[in-house]
Image (cartoon, rainbow, N blue to C red):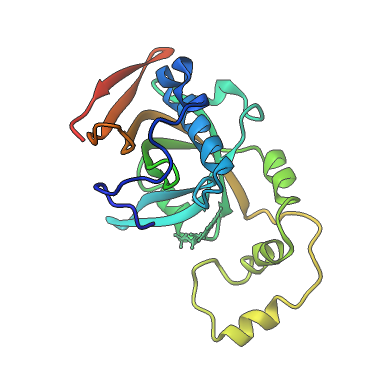
Length: 225
Ligand SMILES: Cc1cc2nc3c(=O)[nH]c(=O)nc-3n(C[C@H](O)[C@H](O)[C@H](O)COP(=O)(O)O)c2cc1C
């Protein structure tokens, strides 16, 4: 997004707000939530997005996804030992390569970069399937074309090759489906490690911290940026 590690972030230095709340600083997930809210208020196009890396056949694969805030809609008991709930989730189609890659390793890597704040997060996450009911309800909020695409994937798996753009457009000339297909799925993200890199420092020395789950809390370590 045009901001390298040595770049001067615009309009961030000295800023105050929920991000500087001492409670949020002890809890990297609360801070991520506060940073995304602040980025959104600044009109940051990355505020709702993440990059998700997984492994397919031993190769790294990465893609942009919408990172949905599900806070309050997911039961806390679904968090495995040694992990913390993030309350963030992903929605995707089971026919896609990424779905199969999720089964290849126990974890995925999640990256959030917020150019408006010059802040990067890196999380190691494990994924837990969301209930079919949450997926169905959320699917109703999808725009028209993504709804039709989700049904197209039943016959033409996502990321597969299709004959031409004209064929694709022709296949999507149908009325809006009313319900989610069974291939529409969602996952909630739990994490055991969060790293936050903040470039926007008065003295120019980046602030980099790693948070590791420790019981009900977090261990914070300062890293060389
Ligand atoms: C801004 C943006 C948001 C996206 N959000 C999603 C999403 O929420 N879910 C999804 O399955 N794909 C999303 N995509 C498409 C993915 O990046 C990717 O192209 C697609 O899911 C196929 O990925 P795969 O071949 O790695 O499985 C998004 C792409 C962009 C550019």
